[in-house]
Length: 393
Image (cartoon, rainbow, N blue to C red; front, side, top):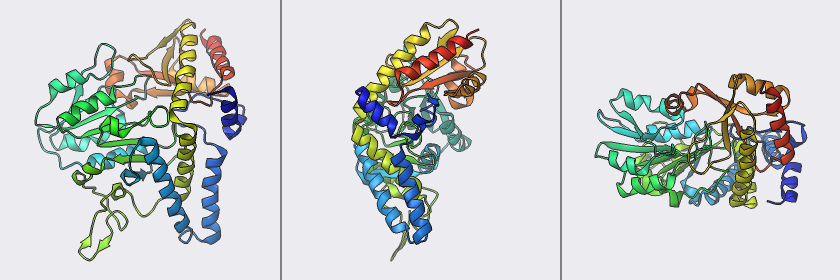
């Protein structure tokens, strides 16, 4: 991306005009003014015409968002559902896989998102076992080790592609090759991937993939994407149903034959209008261009951090994402986040609960996290690095 393109992006983003330096895009990024306008326009339409009456136009906007999501993921629009959060989307798909039986095995990467592990507890209570795929020498989930674990009892392979606690990029496509070869259901948590790097569900060979709208997509909070491979839909029996997901027919209530079987009749058309605009913007910008900018920016920050005494980086893997996990000697991660916030510099901080298996395996109690976007500039990097140097003690 050229400096002029970055400037245009920033000029179209109110948060970039506020004087705050935002390096917490993995928590929630900054929406554009056009995304805010799309939300407000639908709210005004509801206030003017009546909320139910404005639903007709709202439904049109939702379908535009669905097509834009399909374009971004290289998926048919009919394979996309919307939810209120990434965790909700993943949990609905997981619960629809049941019923779970004693002895069933669920294989996960060591870096699994804590919310997904929490959702697995009902399966564990039914007698299923959650087992960890061994890591390779770089710390990534190992496809070869995974294949050696497989037997008839394995009912699911689940991978958090880009973990919340660092720059690791797990080999999602190689894991997908193993899953498809053995015809085992394969779920991907792409919460930190969608909107940051190219995501092609056909190449990944996944059955289910989810992501939040508020992170790298720059959409509003309270939105998420759920992809279901069309051929896999018949294996998912959602427990939550209503007149939208299971409409009445002459034969009775019948589940929809597309991903909308995971949606409900009550949604926020305003929020999904905003998400649709954010999806349109990233498709227009080009995800390859976004990814190259993220790689360049995060590489500069990593190099600068290595020059600061007392900072330890916690990257795993061979290629790193725009999530930079670190600790500063003498500082609690959450206190560091708060202190930088008082200087109008936003970063993130995660505890063990976010990625419990990996944090415990590496003896980490918390990490501070810088996460970048194409919106970030060299001047912002200098402000961040200067602040950290002043705090190193």
